[in-house]
Amino acid sequence: EAGVAQSPRYKIIEKRQSVAFWCNPISGHATLYWYQQILGQGPKLLIQFQNNGVVDDSQLPKDRFSAERLKGVDSTLKIQPAKLEDSAVYLCASRGVSGRSKTQYFGPGTRLLVL
Amino acid sequence: AQSVTQLGSHVSVSEGALVLLRCNYSSSVPPYLFWYVQYPNQGLQLLLKYTSAATLVKGINGFEAEFKKSETSFHLTKPSAHMSDAAEYFCAVSRLGNQFYFGTGTSLTVIP
Image 1 (spheres, rainbow over the protein chains, first blue to last red):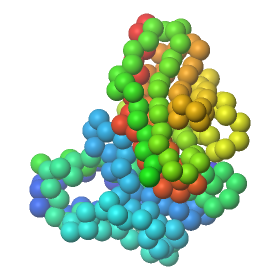
Image 2 (image 1 turned 30 degrees about the vertical axis):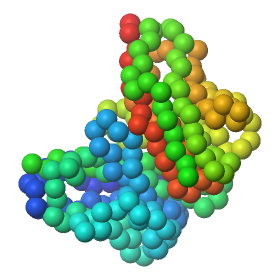
Image 3 (image 1 turned 45 degrees about the horizontal axis):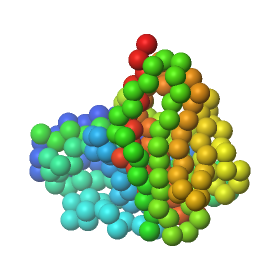
């Protein structure tokens, strides 16, 4: 079973620029999460999708962050414009709907550095 | 509301010694609890999980954790530390397996 795929793995941009991250969840997983992990901290949920609908985006800074999950499969997280404090690892995770459904599976993350 | 507190941001043990990483949770409903490990430049990998079945949970790599409702704890243990156990460990709580809340992590150092 292929795991959660993310790209790019690393990105360096200047503040006020835009950036987008891509996530491909495990096949058949209906739930997809985006987390922000700042150095030295635990992951913080940004947004949760169930299929192509948003379940929870209460911690997403909507003035600059956006996310979509077209067709309920792949997802894209965008930052526009980026700030220095957005430097972090962005983790994508997915979860199924039955069987071992209580487990999230994480991708390797995208490490973003904003200069 | 759900939250977790990990006591000790850094833990050092000698190789072969007992590993004990502490996690206390707060939950308004029966929680699901998880321990994840993160190696440098990698995503999180599930070590073990508690989902209201047996209170003593065994995971991968010799780790186990015990759910203690009276103490609201879910501490992670391993009888004998290996060098390869050096990593960041995160405790997480979930409401019915849906929203997940992570602790701030504990960095484990294993001294040869």
